[in-house]
Picture 1 (cartoon, one colour):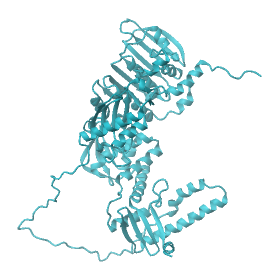
Picture 2: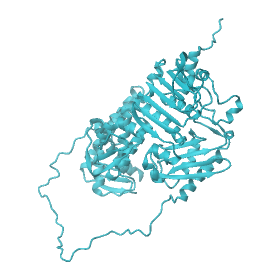
Picture 3: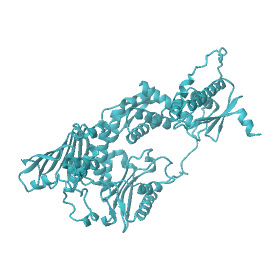
Picture 4: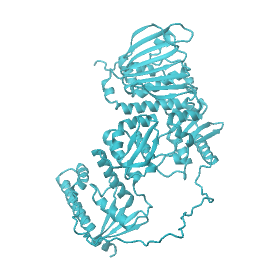
Length: 606
C-alpha cells in the first residue's frame, strides 16, 4: 500500500496560513500599521482604494529595513521581536510571530519600498503569491511603504465572500480607530478613494478621542485614573446621558494593544448600575498598563484576546476606578430644590373681556353613514401560516395548521365586528389596555401595539419611498463620525423615505430640515445617530437595513409603558392595531394582545 501523507506545497501552506491572519482588507490594514508602529514611526499614512480590495498603501517614517531584511521579512516566522520561547512572556511590540507579511504576500500582489535613514539608496521588492518576482535598488524616502494590490486575486472564493465596499470600509475604519486611539502620540492620516477620512495630529489621549469621534464628545468624557501594583488604569468613561442602545465606543487597551474581554466589560457596565437604564451601554476608553509577565497575548492570531494571571483583581480595580470617577465628578441623579417648579400664569388685565367657551355641534353628522374600512385579514395571517407550514410534515399536521388558520380568521372577524360595537376601554397598570365587548375581553400591551403600528407604517414608507415629514422651525446641525458617514452614504435614500430631510455633503456639516410626523423635533438628531449606530452593529444589507430602521424608529417614537392614555387614545390605538397586516404579534412571535372569551372566563369561576 502506497503512502498517502504528503507535505503541502509552500504556496498552498501559505494560503492556508493566510486564512487565519488575513480575513478581509481590514486585517491587512491592522498588520501593516502595527508593523509601522514597531518600526518607531511618528507619522503613518494609510491610502485605500475600493475599500482595500484594489489597493492598500501604508507609508511610515520609521527606521526602515536593509536590503537583506526587505527580502527576508516575507518568509514565514521571520521576526526580529523574539529569539527564544521565554521572550513570549515579555512582549512589548505589536507583532512578533512573523506571519503577517508572509500571509499577505500569499494572497495579494505586494510591492515594498524601504530605506534606512543612513542609507542613500533603498530597496524595492515585488512579490506575488509568495514568489519574489523582482528585487532592486530604488530611490525612496526614509522609512517603509507597502503597496498591497488586488487582495485575494489568486483565491477567488475568498474574494467572493467579501462584503460590499461600505461594510469593508467600515471594518477598515474600526481597525484604524483602534490603533490610532492606542497611540495618540503618533500622527495618522487615512484617505479612501482620494477623499480624506482622518487627519489626526500627534496629541494627548483626550484630544485624540475628540479628533476621532468629534467635538461633541469633549463634554461627555469623565476621566478615570487609578494606579496599583497590579495594574494602572487611565482613560475616560462617558457620562450616563451619553449611553447608547448599541455597543459603540467601548475600548480596552492593554499596554497600548486593543483587546476584547467580556469579563472586564462587565466590570465597567456594572459600575453604571442605577445610573443608566437597562438595555443601553456606556461609552468607555480605558488604557491599562500591566507587567507583561502577568499576561499571555499568544492565544489568538489576531492578538485581540489576552489571558491574565489575576483576572479577578483586575476586574475589581477597574470597577472601583470607574465608580470612583463617576462619584468624584458627581455623576448621579440629583434634585434641585432651589429650582422653581410652579407654573407661570400671566395675570389677566383689568379691562379684559371674559368670553365663555362655546361648543359647536354638527347636527347633520351621522356616524352610521360612513362605510367601515374593509381589511383583508388573510394578509394578517399569511406570515404566520408560512412559518407554521415550514415546521410541520405530512398532510395531517398541515390540516391541523389550516384549521388553526380558519379559527384565527374567525377571531379576526370577531374583532372587526366588536370594534363596531360599544366597547369599553380601561387602562391597567399604565401598561395594558383592557378592551371589553359583549363577547370577549381583550388585553392589549400598549407599547407593543403602538410599535407594531409604527413598524408597519415605517416599513411601508421604506418600501414605497414615500415618507411624510414635517418641516422643523429651527434646522438642526448634525455631525457624523467617519464610520457613521460610511453608513449614511449608503442609507441616505432610506433615511429620506422615513421622512427625514437632510442637506449637506460633508459629514461634519449636515442640516436636518424635516423629520417624520411621528418623530419629536427635539430628538431628531439622536434618532438619526441611533439608526446609524444600529446599522453599523447589525449590518446594512437591504432587507436587514429596512427591518432594522423600521423597528428602531418604531421603538424610539412609540407609546411607552407607564404612560397614561385617555379613552379616545386607547380606542384609536386598538382600531389602528386592527388595521395592521399582523395585529397579533409584536416581534419574534410575541403577542400584542390576548383574547379571553366569555365562556372561558365562566369556566375560571366554576
